Image 1 (cartoon, rainbow, N blue to C red):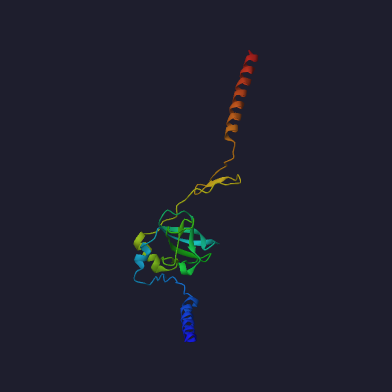
Image 2: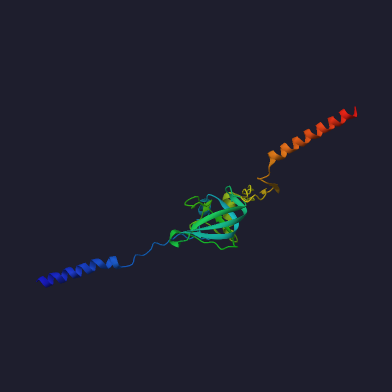
Length: 203
């Protein structure tokens, strides 16, 4: 009787342990953009900004990939000639990747940007810029695109001249303007005194 009870307890314990030992299945992201789908206008409309640009660089930090874009045209949003977009490297987190050198039409979000200006996931309408249907939908929602906004270039940290983008004007932040002004005033006063002395001697 005791052996029978021990056998039953052992079988029940093994049965209870099996679900714990079974591998858990990861929940994959089911969000995939279909440019031929019937909801394309709705997908295109849900964007913080929309632009067309080519990827120029990529770097990964922890679980986030950052992509630098050279922007060619803007449908909506305040975007300069370059911008940064982040995305998760995990497909299960609906992250999406970009190829350096390829041009995309990008539909961004401001959610979980990880310090970048914008973020993108596989649920957005982002695709290669050669996709005519996506572009037509973007024009329908936002109108014809415009050139990116020209912005001031960052201040050089090594003392190199700063260039104001779009003007070609250069400035040197280390140029000693106060010293130059004082020198000019001193030179002018010396010239005036010398001129007066010469006139006095001529009399």
